Each structure stands twice: as structure tokens, then as C-alpha cells.
Length: 130
Image 1: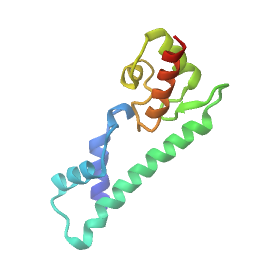
Image 2 (image 1 turned 45 degrees about the vertical axis):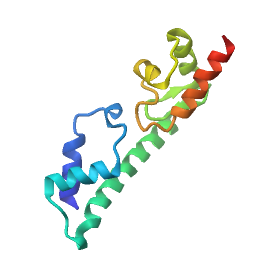
Image 3 (image 1 turned 90 degrees about the vertical axis):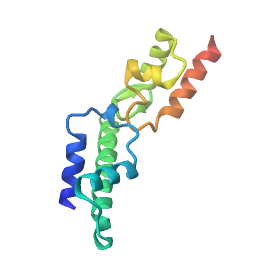
Image 4 (image 1 turned 30 degrees about the vertical axis):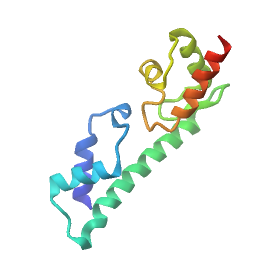
């Protein structure tokens, strides 16, 4: 289990949250097995526990960011602390028509991706006002 954690640490070290978007359990498990070899059946949980711990750490990070947020408008992207007002202003200023383009400006939606649907709704709302 500790070796699995070290492999994940090496894979993620030095990367920013936006670079980690799209990490799947299968890709992480494959990386661990590439480094350590295939686990015997009685040790398969070692990689799973390390992956679950990583996912829990990301969840804790997002929750801490949300608790720290102080603002007048709702927090849309908890990974990067981007509010609805910030996103609306960026959409109007840049004319962004998709979350990816807006993510380059605000970083919103480029972390875990959970806020992308809300970002799409904000983009559509601004388009509807035009």
C-alpha cells in the first residue's frame, strides 16, 4: 500500500490541479501496476486504498476551499475559488462560448470538472441576454 502511495506521489508531484483533470481510477491503477508489477489477488486492495486516499484528499481540499470562500455571489468552482460573479464578468469580457475557453482565463472547470455544467449554464444565460 505504501509503495502504491509513493507511485501516486511521484506521478502527481509538481503538477498543478488543472493538470490532474481526468485522472481515472483505471489510469492510476495502471500506472501503479506499470511501476510495481501486477499485484497478487490478495494484495489488489493495496492500489485501490491508495487511489481512494488520493480522491479523499482532493475532496477534502475542495471542501476546505469552499469553507474559506467569502463572497457575495455563489462559489461555482471550489477547486479554484471562482465565484458566479467572476465567471459572468469573464464570459462577458472574453465572449467565451465553452467552459474550456473560460477555464483558460479563470481556471474554473479545469480541476475536478464538477462545475462544468454550471459554467455551461452561465454561458448560455449570458448568450440569452445578448
